[in-house]
Amino acid sequence: MAAASPAGPRFRSQIELIGRLYLNLWKRLDLIDGDNKWMDVAPPNAQALDEYIDNLRNQMSVQNTNAALHEEAEARYRQARGLIQAGGGAEFGRLKTVLRDEAFRFLDQARQAAN
Image 1 (cartoon, rainbow, N blue to C red):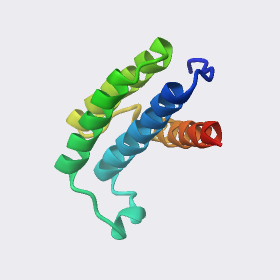
Image 2 (image 1 turned 180 degrees about the vertical axis):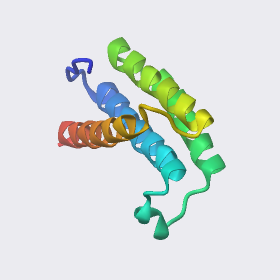
Image 3 (image 1 turned 30 degrees about the horizontal axis):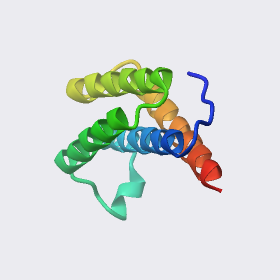
């Protein structure tokens, strides 16, 4: 995991975008494995989720204030996309856990930076 250091509002925006990207990649992977009771509340549409993820990536590129964080997020995105296209894989469960945990960590860090 890349080290993060606060650098103002743009940095906070970047870490929030990365957190949202990771959370939505986790949701997208969750569509594949069927262990998704949370979706009973609001079942996502895979295509809409993919479009939202692409939008987050575009925004993230504009807000890029930390190249290491950006590259790490892009690497995780590529790994998740590969698993989505393959319908799963050996790293599936581990990546889901990493994405969920990192999403909450980044979103919490963004929230704290806003206060």
